[in-house]
Length: 256
Ligand code: G
Ligand code: G
Ligand code: NA
Ligand code: MN
Image (cartoon, rainbow, N blue to C red; front, side):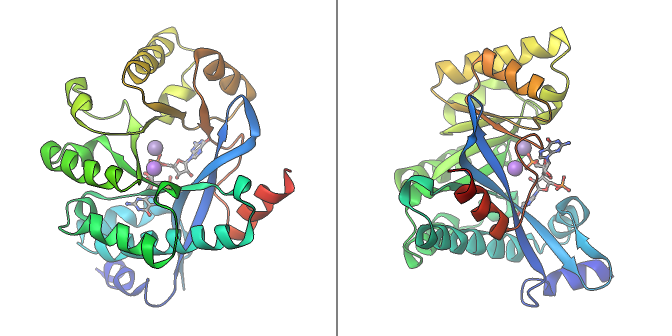
């Protein structure tokens, strides 16, 4: 299809842009812990496209590898610029979404480690986010890849937690640092059943020593509720929408 052919060229034509959404300390939301990198496509005719409009096309059409490769490199270059421009105490981590095809590609870990080295970026500044569905394509292999990455110091995060197949037994074999509670649970916190699910997720996280990010926080009420439940980190429109790198730097420096 037309879109796919254009998408294939997007990285080399410099049409892709990374936006950054803050991840904050819910007990002190002006403290920014990191950003999630979210890709945009500045399409010459259609304008700025959100990932939902082209990531699935890229995955189905087999071009997610080149898009994902561009995203990874750009995020790491951004970390280098953060290191150059910001004092150490303000330097955030960046989380990058990794698609199944990327994650399962032989040599993925080496590529990540090499990119970090080439840019003199500390491994712990990078978090890789995979969804349950990506992790479960091949759990044994996922565990090996995650273990290697973590041994080198890269952090790992399980995205959209609670929305997948959630046979919880697989979690104990997968070395994640953080789980991200899907925004559907946060948006339904008024519902008692939903609160019980979030509480159960927090119990699991606690017993497995996983950190937790609550996604999709839009109101101070939601922030307060998750904070009281014991969530440490939050992400959502209440704290900031995905924004260009310049604005992310201003947010980091303006707050102090
Ligand atoms: O359209 P919207 O911004 O809601 O889409 C967000 C979705 O796109 C999320 O599921 C997010 O994980 C995914 N996404 C955003 N950026 C990237 C990226 O760089 N790589 C991959 N694989 N997925 C991404
Ligand atoms: O699947 P993933 O968690 O990576 O998707 C992140 C997506 O969620 C991004 O597209 C981002 O724009 C969106 N998002 C982030 N914060 C909020 C929020 O507070 N409300 C809603 N509705 N969407 C959000
Ligand atoms: Na994500
Ligand atoms: Mn998510």
